[in-house]
Image (cartoon, rainbow over all chains, first blue to last red; front, side):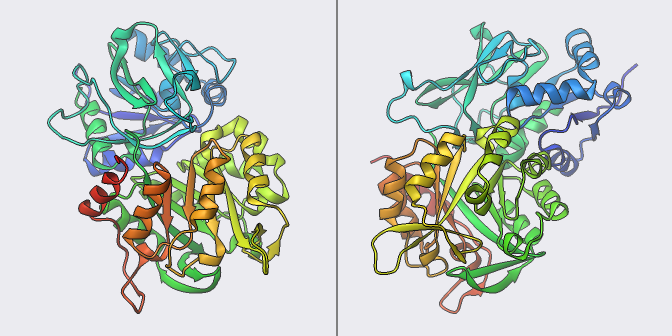
Length: 209
Length: 258
């Protein structure tokens, strides 16, 4: 049976839930804030937001009691999921920022920007508007639009074990993975919900997957 | 390539927006949600929202209003004002605010920063320094409580402490230049840039596009915030929310590449 499309923004006490909801409302795309298993079960797409530190985000997610069902939906039922910022980082295996184990949906390490490869004095966090490159395999952006930029705010970045899982890179002293993906799982390091029309386009295309 | 952030700064007093001169004489400039909607349309880089009355009038952050503003913002938001404990910081972040600024509390009770950093991460904690120049002296000094309290702390002491505690950004606000629209204090900015490794945002004194360009020319990728410039228009300071045009932006970016 075909379910009507419904995007769930996972509410585990973190992130810009309302910013996502507002954008989808303006696009006339059905959206809900999901803070329970019942709601999560109805979703055809899942947005996993996140602000803060790696361990804090994971402990909040554990407390929400939603991890089991999330894993079932994402890994078994292949429901498309979009992790945002720390919501993306916790999809990795582990992080230099914390001690907790990540979800390991996309195998990889989350590491701090390294001054070893910095061109000049390394200012952290990487904060502000930056561009994406090498995005030929990324179906979440309109490749015809020039000058696309997105808002970044982070000191750690995702390094997938398999470079196949890098869908776009961004230059800050060196190139790092700013969009990752594996099957139905997507992660963006920047904040599409705070990146004006460029970010809205990503959220729209995610809803159309 | 990372771009400099050009940031409108809105001052909140209760539920209204105001603009001050040298931290005094607040003038009503409008409704915050309306201003955010206009700044959405103009695709601003980031928004800075400072509740300038909260600490001195002794009221906590207006969570209801912050929640409404954060939901409306299609750009990153930094909120500051009236914060006294780290629980408030986590709560504000969970409302969908990207960054929380700490001014008076960072001087009076810096311990709360350690816990806040552990919970919400360095990238979301901004240290705010309100700076004046001492009378008959060439030295800068931090002030707190909306400029009413002199601390004897130098900007360098403060930024080094804040960085050690894990703050992810420092906002340099020159009180002497607030609302005068006569340009930024480059000497102060140079002092902090040379002695810090976190992003800086400068505030206080912008009167024209040229003032912003001068900062980017000298300091490259930094945050450049302005109040009066983006809320007033013309000699008589008529209230008109405005922002950079595309050609203004191109001009700012072109001076980066040199």
